[in-house]
Image (cartoon, rainbow, N blue to C red; front, side):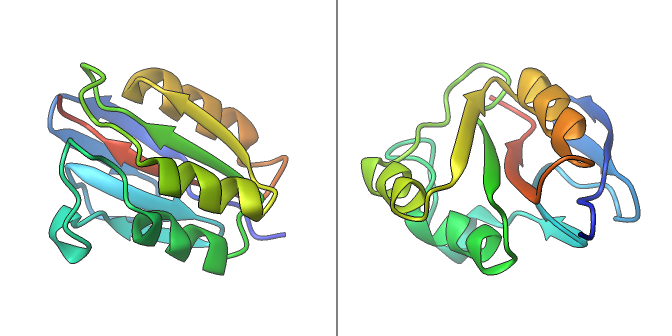
Length: 121
């Protein structure tokens, strides 16, 4: 199993991830990751994380997904997104960003984990 990259640092508006250039938001999965561009699927704080946002994580073989709701918990998750993850039998953790990063980092050596991380509100 190829591990997911470790989150090294999070502060308001900036994340550092092992092997990747710094960014504000990240999409991470086994073997890699990239900056998470909300415009790609029209993601907004409400209605929140889109099914298309997590599809890439599923395509990369994630059996566990960590979703951050932002530092102030303003990022929502669409019911359809939760249903997609449930339909694939994925274990899901939903937390404030710093707590989500801690959970993700604990899981990277244990299971194929992916995550969506938002470093502001």
